[in-house]
Image (cartoon, rainbow, N blue to C red; front, side):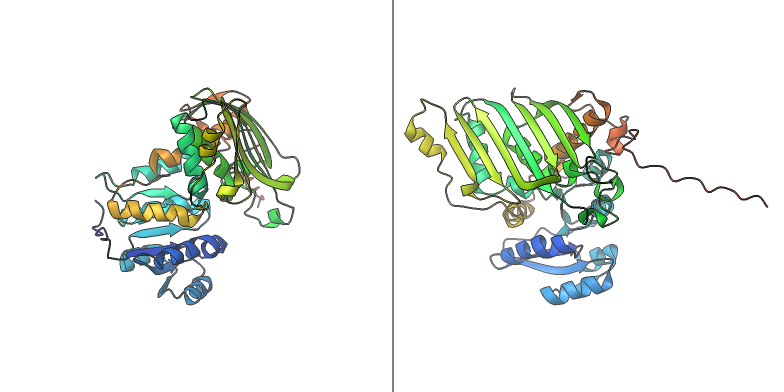
Length: 387
């Protein structure tokens, strides 16, 4: 049974707690919540971090009344409607389940969690009464006017069938970046650039094109001495017949995030880095397409950039209405499933089909799948010293 936390009315403030007070909380979660609080009833009632000094400073800077170092105590005393998680992925499962069981909705930073097993445990902890609580993943690149407009064009078939697709996350991370001991490890980050960097573009690609059917892939450690990969490439076939190449890299000095979809009647391309506006999208009609029709395609309307704020706006509307939000449940799981399938295809050398990674598959409980050369080395047993 879930505790009874009443759904806030339109006039009542949504009570929000921020868990994790590091960089992503300060740069993304807090500014989004603060901006929305200026336009609607919303109150940040608490923040939580295991580092007492960090959470005290965070609350002082943000004017938040209640700092905590214990999540369960905060949930009991403050009874928030919404908990935003800005903590490392290895904590997401337990923290999300704790918040859901306390009756709070959850907005969890990506990567969602280190395995499909963890995600399914989270989904099973959601409310079963049709109105929550639910746990949504931060996939902000789906949100904003540009992605909404292109998604509508593709869904309506205006530009014809999608045919040839490129999805590129080619970023650069130097040796100093990986000097932090928790980076580049399966236990802390859950994966390499496919999981921690490229998942945003892959999620947007799935949101635009719909279900995939099969994937082949390669992964490598070309530069960095890490457990995970530092580059991967993949070939993906979609249910609608489109064929995609996907590249995820942290070895690319000329950094870019890009999606290109060649349809029968036009090419649509998004080029940006960490977030997009209308101006970052380009639509090139095929020869013979009427110019007035092409002008309609290029009219994106008022510019709403992709952002945490854009996604959170919709999530709060869903919370007040008691309906499942986007990027939760099966809709949130699909991107993690594609990442898991990419790793399985790369580490086994085989073709992986959608839906094949189930509880009996080693890639269900760990994205490295216990693959030789990729799974973490087991700790050596201490040698007994004879008396």
